[in-house]
Image (cartoon, rainbow, N blue to C red; front, side, top):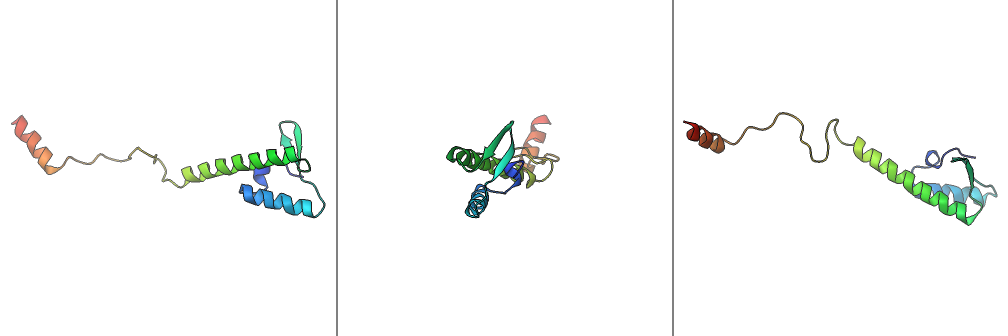
Length: 99
């Protein structure tokens, strides 16, 4: 008996391997927190649902790890910190135009 499928395994492959091992030993896996419904791995429909939920949980985890691996305050296209000064040639040209 499990409350959430994403707490049971870290990837879809691990989840399916664990369910297979449980079923080989003559037991069933039941997941309780499915919006009031109980998910039982003994039926093909429930096995399909469990596979999809495992894939979604793995996707969410991969997204979370991708965001966590970046430095704090860093986004994909935003550069943090003080802007770089213009190159010397551009500064000289601007200075000549203003004088």
